[in-house]
Image 1 (cartoon, one colour):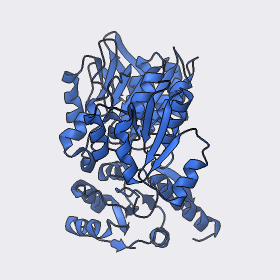
Image 2 (cartoon, rainbow, N blue to C red; image 1 turned 90 degrees about the vertical axis):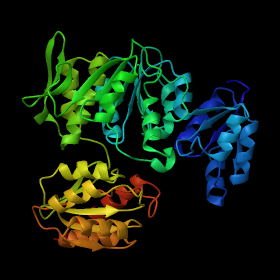
Image 3 (cartoon, rainbow, N blue to C red; image 1 turned 180 degrees about the vertical axis):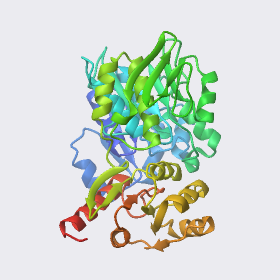
Image 4 (tube, one colour; image 1 turned 60 degrees about the horizontal axis):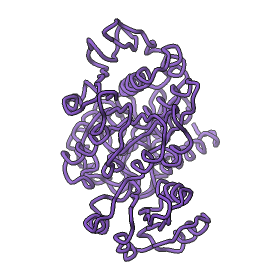
Length: 454
């Protein structure tokens, strides 16, 4: 890429990381961002990168003058200026595609609507038992292109991949790919559910007979993908005893293979809770077993794994009430999985920027398992109406005051109840991202604990 004029569109974590990598490769980089305010300029100029800045909506017209364009995940391939550049013959690639072209490592790629971060992190921890370098990136942590350059031939790159990142891949071919589940999400971006599914399927589209594809047998949509790939397919299932695949058998996580059954680990050794985490663990076991990790190493790493931040994360216990941060639950399906992880007695905090997703299943489970529903954010009114329709008995509304919602949960909860932040919404009405929302929740809860309140 030496000397090529490459535009990086989107100055977030992935975009800045890609720009750094491209500059190091000798490209002439222009960093585009539609924001043009003092804060954005100061941040980008402070990076000290040898790039040209092209800020503001009008600057995007210059994309068509580039040799290549690298898209940050937040920029859609359907963006008018991106589409115009493509029509003018400019190659458009995602930051994931860039990473794949630059790395020499073996790639494990994981996607799905829910569970990606937990599964990817767990795979990374298990893979670190091998005597080679392992890097983890993508839709988690650092830009995948930076992580990919940190590992070489014979090493492993473990990647969490979103549907956004798969929109513009052309040569991306992971040696091991996994699809965890599919439920309607990001329809505003992909236009239709079929478009969303097609984006996810790009993770295995270029795999061959020497590659592996790990699929969730319990998800009908995902199960049907087995007929669309040239890769070797291995299913995992929490609900079905598979003749061949990774599943549960009398409390053990096992691999049922043509040569016989291999017992991996007792499910009771896991520290992460909930049926959805059994699925995540089975997917991680499948990926790492197929990568050649010894069973003993898989079991040890699985037993030591305590989960990821913002996903059913225990914050603290106050007067017998446990507080859980599940800020990463940005859709109803993820909140359903969190609700299913507890037997009941839940004081649930939900709301945020409304994706206008179907709430039927979620609100039925709220009625069954939550003693109190506390709503906040832009989604409050619609969520309240849907909860009332579902027969939820105690619905409380805090408007745009997230702090008031946390304080109210603290006032209402009595042992052995649990307080669960699981918003079922994105965070952009009140916060920069779900991580900030989770941190604010944890800080508020710890402040309550430090005050010695009940």
